[in-house]
Image (tube, rainbow, N blue to C red; front, side, top):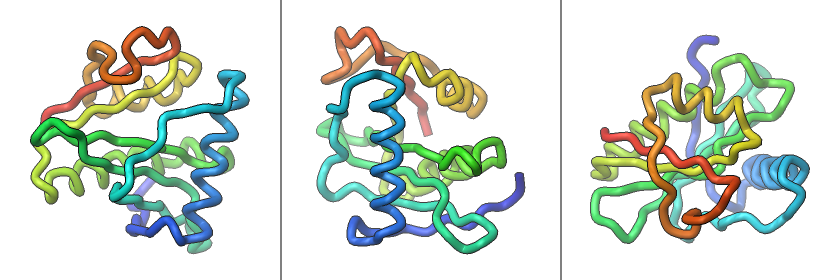
Length: 148
C-alpha cells in the first residue's frame, strides 16, 4: 500500500475523463439515478498512477464561495485497484494541494450507499458534519469536514 505517484491532469486528459465517467456510472448503479452535482470550473484534478503507469484513481479540489474553504469531489478508484491505498494517497494529496492553495478547511459529500467511502473518510481523520448547500435535505448524503 505504499507510495502511489499522483499527478495533476486537465479535463482534456483521456484517462481522467474515463475515471470521471466510471465514477458517475458507479454512482448511478448504486443510487438508481444519474444526476450528480457537477465539479465547478477551475477545479484541480489529480490522478493516481498504478504500477503499469496508467491512471487508476482520481480526485478533484474545488473552491467554494466561503473564504478558506475548499471542497473535495470525485474521489474514485477503479474496482480492481481498491484496497491498495490509492484513495488514501489521493486524500492526502488533496489535503496537501488545499494547503498550498491557502485553504484552511475542507468539506466533502458522499452517499449512504458508499460504506467504503464513509470508512475511508472516518479513518483518515474527517468528522461527519451537517449537510451543506445542495445536500441539505438529501436523504442519501453524508457530509464530512476537516480543518487543515
